[in-house]
Length: 167
Image 1 (tube, rainbow, N blue to C red):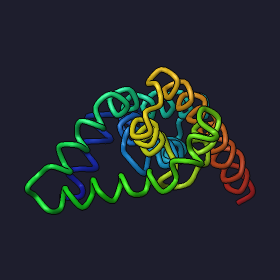
Image 2: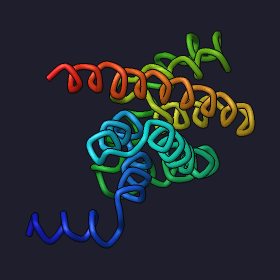
Image 3: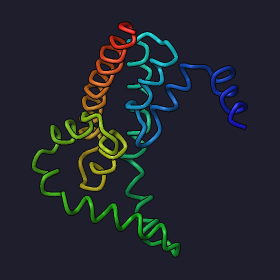
Image 4: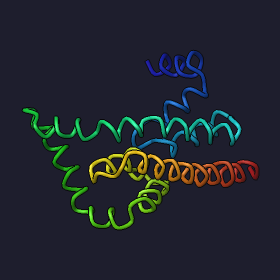
């Protein structure tokens, strides 16, 4: 089964679209897509562009729809959805003062830190829940994703590429 999935993605979908779709996934985002592009042998500029665009694509939808989804989840009769929605609301409320204090640049830096759960998905969720204007949140996410892309690209193509060259 694993070979069928691998064949589908690499031979039918193609390496570029694999990187693109990977960069759209929550948690993985471009932090996983750029190393994947490196493994495929894509040039650094192509890895960067594909990953940034793919990582940003879900952001407007999250900004515009997440509050509706969270409200539905918190009012759902399914206990699992209630717990997730309430957990997210509590997390945002706990840090609301810090987030609102640093607003645009705080969100940008939060998204730019190339660690799991600090990317565009989480940043857009936080921005929407605290009521940041969507255009402002998107610009902040754009800058944050671009910075994260540069950092990850330098680490992967610079550091790992250099180590691979030595061996």
